Amino acid sequence: MGLSTSATHIIFFIASVVIAGGFIGVAVSVMLNISSGIQDRGDLISHQLSENFSIINDPERMSNNPLYLYLKNTGKIALSYQHLSVLIDGVSYHYSVLENGTAWNPGITITLKISVNLESGTHVVKVVLEDGFSKSFTFEVS
Image (tube, rainbow, N blue to C red; front, side, top):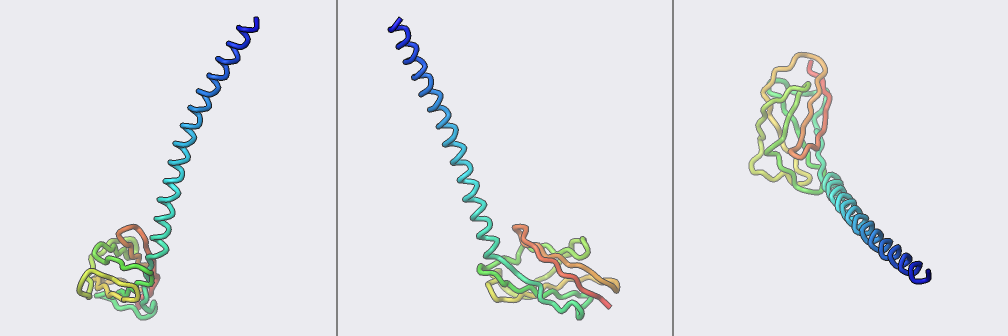
């Protein structure tokens, strides 16, 4: 009776160690995935906090046909204006950039020229960078 009880305890102990080892393996894998996700999210937020721009037009004195937008890089990193999207009242418009080069360094203002004839009233322009960061601006055309 003593030997069978000891053997049973040894079998249960070994089974417990195997199950605990499997659980630890799964737990470590999950923790590494969570850690990697947190790191990626932190990098994304850091990049988003470093990039910023403003539309610095006077909303009461907007030109019409062509429409000029003045965008200032107010962030900490250089931006690219090669792949901007410009939406006016939800419609995408083609634009030309009046600056030379591709670097839009911090503190620099660029000018976008958009050939559009807007009706009188209130309009909303939305400028979207290639990574999805965007700014909106409401203005009046008289």
